[in-house]
Image 1 (cartoon, rainbow, N blue to C red):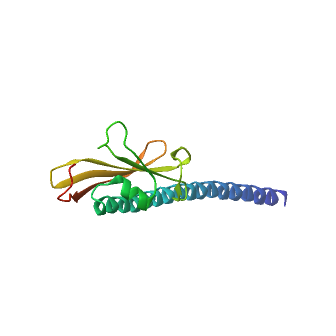
Image 2: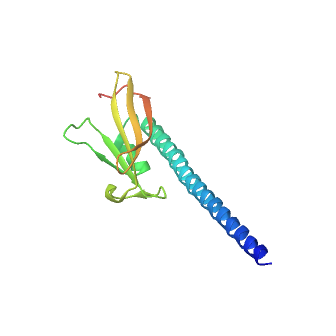
Image 3: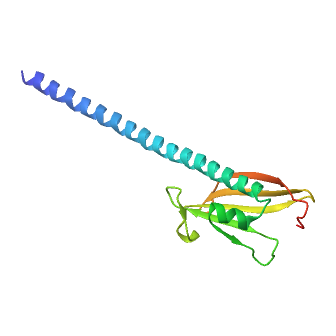
Length: 148
């Protein structure tokens, strides 16, 4: 009788150990799935924001100031008045933030050149630490009276 009780106890311990290992593997899989889901969500949201910014750049013929007035963010002309860098910051929930210092994500749009009739630019969305999430080129037809 004692051998049978001892055997049952050993069987239970083995089953608890197998269950514990299985639970640890499943928990790790859930954590990996959550990370993947968040990353995919960030890429999709970054693509949406970049597309909106690119459409505004097209609508306003490359005028970063006018696009920023509609979308949000700020324009830095730097030392060159023709050099317009439009930036907008977003928090972890993709809500527009005021200063870039507290932002989790940053949208940057700038005119990169073009020809006499065609303007070209780039819109990129990156993490605040600098890692690129999404980038899209944008082109627009310049107006006849544009002198850029």
